[in-house]
Image 1 (cartoon, rainbow, N blue to C red):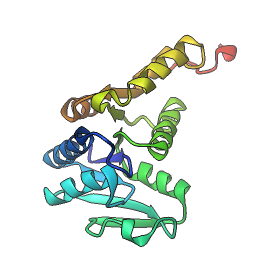
Image 2: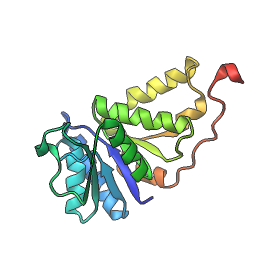
Image 3: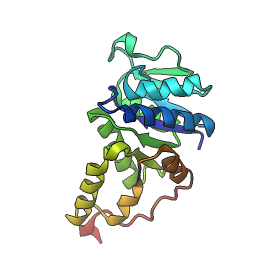
Length: 192
């Protein structure tokens, strides 16, 4: 695994542990010679991961839509900055560049990015590992919701294996490096 796309909040959140785990992840990426691919911002948890990667001698590749955000949000020290025309192109390019995905705590944008790559995985568009860093149980409601989705008959149980949920960056990365996609069954019950 050479590059991991990190989805993360544009705010730092209310707990110092969110920042601490973002920085741990950044250090872990560098120590494993893995490049960061992310949204290109210098603020929030996105900025904390990039700052740590860059200050530790790693590479950080940002992908930012032109004219969507104020110029002062773009991280000034990126190894590479790709400017694209919109959010769809941003996500497509980040996905093209990455060998896997990690979601840190974040808001609607982070959720949207995470669920899109999970949907792509379910459909077989990619077979890359998708992990969430479950800092202080942040993603536990999502894990519970996915279990409920299976119980309610809207998702196959095998799809739970499409997302790795771990509280510690080191354990999450270990699982991602040894990831084998689950054997997918027919997603449509009525077509079985």
